[in-house]
Image 1 (cartoon, one colour):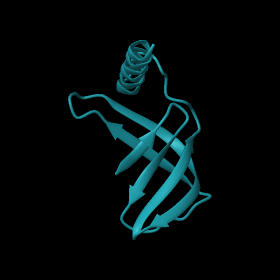
Image 2 (tube, one colour):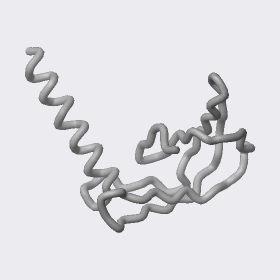
Image 3 (tube, helix red, strand yellow):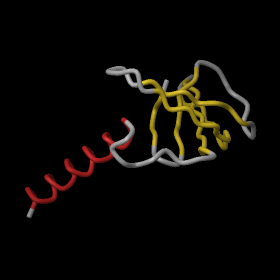
Length: 90
């Protein structure tokens, strides 16, 4: 399960411990459409919290942060939401 993502890496929650210091292929599917993003990633760290296994990874090639990917759309929406919150707190 995807826990967190940025243009340069991700954190996943796994059902079991996954070895680190290896490469893997991460495939992300958008639920609302056919888009698929694939990235080779290096698994850098892992942590277990209350029997949940988290693994942090860095992509070998960043995901574009523009509107050409669903990640870019999420980033843009997040920035707009933050801008709105900042404007309302002034």
